[in-house]
Image (cartoon, rainbow, N blue to C red):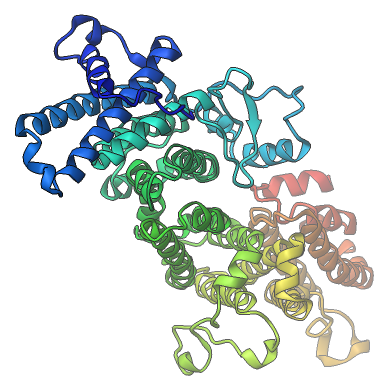
Length: 627
């Protein structure tokens, strides 16, 4: 507040000022200890400030006098008396400064949620909240952390929702308190009490920030503490940190800076910045310790997406961090944030590389029952589908091709990939294709653990088909993989289907040939009934075995299962119908024809429908249908 000049210019000015100072000496008066000057009427506070000004003038005049010949006329005890008075005044002002700060320092109100009907609740803010809430329903107790409203100290202001998409400075104290603090700080600093002023200010405001941190769910954890936590616990903490960091940088720290500038304006060079750093440096380091610990923690595939979330959040915050911490004294905060961002980027690159190696080394040798989709295939394809969701970030982070190609030429334990066929693709797209190449290489190795070659082909068909469907199901992934490579994958699973049919049905259909059934090698000399009976018996046995076995095999995709059944029927049914038409009469004219012609064409058509359902069907079940 602007104070009028003290009109009392006579020699009694110092004595009057000294009386006021001593009256409020808390070491000498019970009343002075119990009351605070700035909590009484305004007039008393103004009188005290005038008194301090008068004492400071007396101290200054005494210093000037001591530099002249008149110094000899100034008694030493008078100088000591002035010094003592100013010390009492500064001690009192320090208490008043602390009291005003404590009275008006409170944490932000994270518990009082926004009022959707309030005009301050904008559509864009609502969209921002919906986006953050959709991240996880498991952490609902902290989903309100973006709906931040500060309880304004000024009585004329009401609590309003504040968006955290950009810097939003709020008034942390009423203007009257700020003016009083400015008046006190000016006098303390001019009297040489800068250090005490900064310490009091930093101590009280830091406590308020600590309280706000607790409400935001920011815990006091060391880097070691964070790295010892289980990843499942860290995931929820990462979500919470991202939301809280927006509030801290854009509202809390920005508003603290504004408050420092208001209180210490025109007091001295860089004093406001010194107070700001005294207040927020510790909390800022505490805030950024969390992503720093994550960035240097042990790498594993499940961490990639949360690390990318942290990276994106910090990248988004970096311009605001640089704006809030723009002074030379706060350079360490800017540097720390930039270094963490760089380490998060490097961690993401490292995890992707290690993920590729982990797929190659995945050691499971036990074949999955029924040749169905291997858990590794599901995991990898779901993983790279998620990677495609982070396309924009990863395109910027992934700058080099996969470590493959000529480097592994001739190495039978590692697949190769010809980059020339994929010219023009981004390094990220090449990494995704390489992951699929490595996955297929691993699956080929796993298929060799099946004793039945037909099942091995079915296994490859199922898994490559799943890969194709996952690529087709993600527009982002399909765009990066490209239709050319997708056609190559499609051709591979169709080739596996063809190989399955050859391995299974060539020998079965071989029973339905005419060769070997005619007597004396002449077509017109007749049919050997014994050879024909043996042929029917062999066909029946082989078909029953295929039916019994392959009913337990599984093709999870309904359309693929139906397509393969149709393809089998198109080969099997016409061949059996023709064979039965040519030779049925030779069997039926003999004894016990039912022992040889066990199945009608319709029986086989129905039996094919049992294939690839994934559960056993008995031989008796097949016979009952024919009966």
